[in-house]
Image (cartoon, rainbow over all chains, first blue to last red; front, side, top):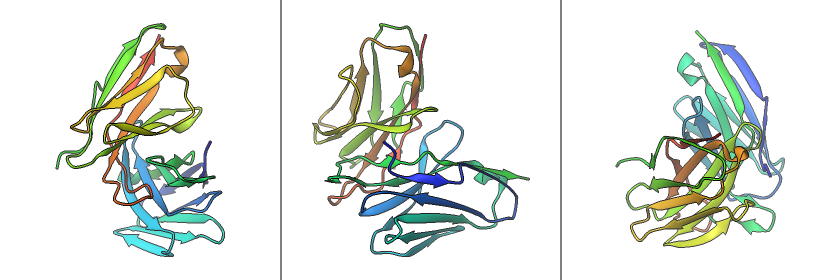
Length: 115
Length: 115
């Protein structure tokens, strides 16, 4: 079952624009992570935000977390064609508590950045 | 440090056969998780190993099995292959510093095609 649900499912923008992706989840979490996947390859870790954090930055990435709404957003500023990829949020808990070694992923947002 | 490696990268099998996939985690990482990714189901957790013990298992039939060796390398096996087993199989390793699921580092995946 998918814990996280990303929105939108697909996003198409021009280079230089900002891209915002949202993720909602169902249970309480210890942390939430964002990953990127290029065209059927392995996932690349982007950022981890813990449940007691509200915002985190890494380069052009900004992640927010609202545990009261059980939602997170990923903002990519000044996007580049190389940012074209699928983006996934993943949570570390499910109903019943922490689940060893298991991340639960959403369906992902497909981002296309046009040169 | 070298990243997570998976072998083979591509595999073509026929129904009824069995297959073994291999994963070498990042040096020092003792937790190895496996995921199956398909267009229809997305990323689904298979199982997690830590110190040669399977600590968690996803909702997959018994045809899917795995093991971990003393050097933390892991293998997964799928017996009696079905067409629906065609997928990208991803391995991820983690330091697992605490009780929550820490950052997972993914390999490039093994693309399995069942004919």
